[in-house]
Image 1 (cartoon, helix red, strand yellow):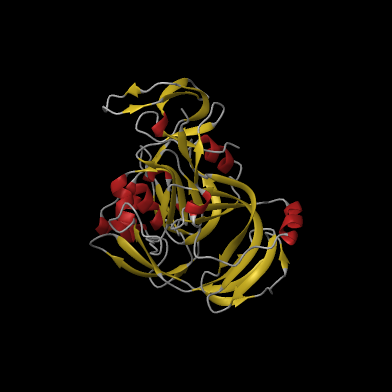
Image 2 (cartoon, rainbow, N blue to C red):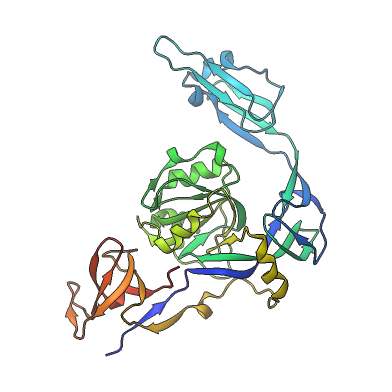
Length: 381
């Protein structure tokens, strides 16, 4: 008897896509339509508007809030620049010295002696926008400071996500099985896209927002943490966008699930390279860093822009056959991937009381028996 399973697109390799680049603030686009660009080309310049940062110096120095003032190395009202020493506590006999470095250019505005918190007004600064990709300028919106570039990229589709379109340099935090908490997050990751492991905790997401991280890619997430990001929802309306100040794409599902090898192996090749992440559409774009990709870009004409990507049109149902590559989506062996060796010819009564055909799957580590209803077909690269 024929068995059918859903076939979900997880990775599209080397496709021609639109990459959006947006100025950080008010500014000017300096390229023209149909112009060819390379990753290092500056396509616009803006002035990032000033804001402020709150630094809890008492916590950072490990001192009583009322004693913070005597450890300051700059006077209130002074300017300080990113990387300069803001506060220093010398160590004792047993060590314990601590230093606080200015996280950005700013003005030391106010120190609260009750909490030990310092308000630091951020200075406006010039920000150049590089193209980030090899491509051709398709359109320019000066009012929004947005440039759309046609480029070759590999596209990854997650299970779900949250957040508007953002980009940055991909930073790998750990292995695909890692459980990522706030100890993994550092101010050095400002503007980056973080590649997490099998689960990212709420405190790591909060710390990432505080540090100015642009996005997170993770295998799994706790359902309650995702619900908090999605405004109390587990399923998000297609036309309703959501953003909490960071973009997140979850590739596998709820709970601790190691990122699938088909996606993880591919992302690791882009460590320290420019990537784009669209949380609300659960898409990750990995632009080609080969100049030879321009030949395909020049010869490809894309259809008119649509609102989002309709995954229902590219996902389908397929017949399950030996040799197919599949991913387990049920509770047992969730996230495992492997090749179908055989499919039983008769039904098996499951502990749940339901009956299903079982299939034998060969993964990289072992052979497992899984109900056909708990499988989805995927394309393995």
